[in-house]
Image (tube, rainbow, N blue to C red; front, side):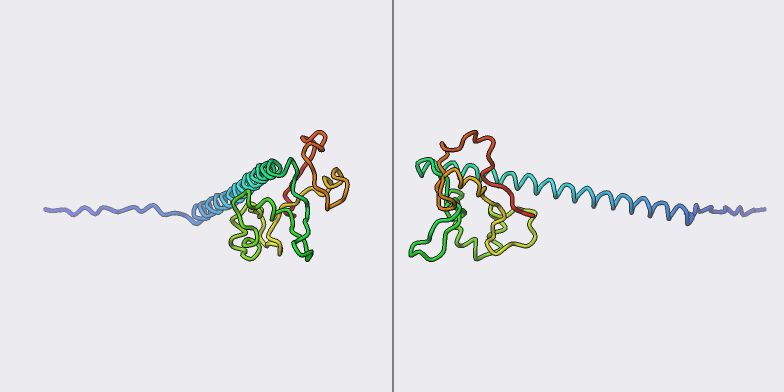
Length: 166
């Protein structure tokens, strides 16, 4: 006589509680990942901004070297007396940049040291860094004064340029 043995196949089922626990853990991990990526992005912006300021520092030094030790003025009268040329026009050639093109093209401006990487909306001048206007007092004639590096006492205590973003 032949007997047929039936084997019962037991399937392990996942309960609703276990499923909810897995979904909660995955959600928590996703939240941590988003938070972590945001902090990495902010760190990258900080490093990029510091690099921009370093480039400006070198450009200011080279400009001063080419101009008998003088820093660029905060503004300079344009030829013909109409308007002024701001300091980025003087420094841009030392960075290998044509600033007049940067002023007319937002996409180009974003990829230059003149724009803080954290800036989301550009201002009309496409420059998010500011020169220290208190340095003009050293020259003695307000904004129109050229500032000689030798005239700055304790240069390590002065900030020449800063991030003016927010």
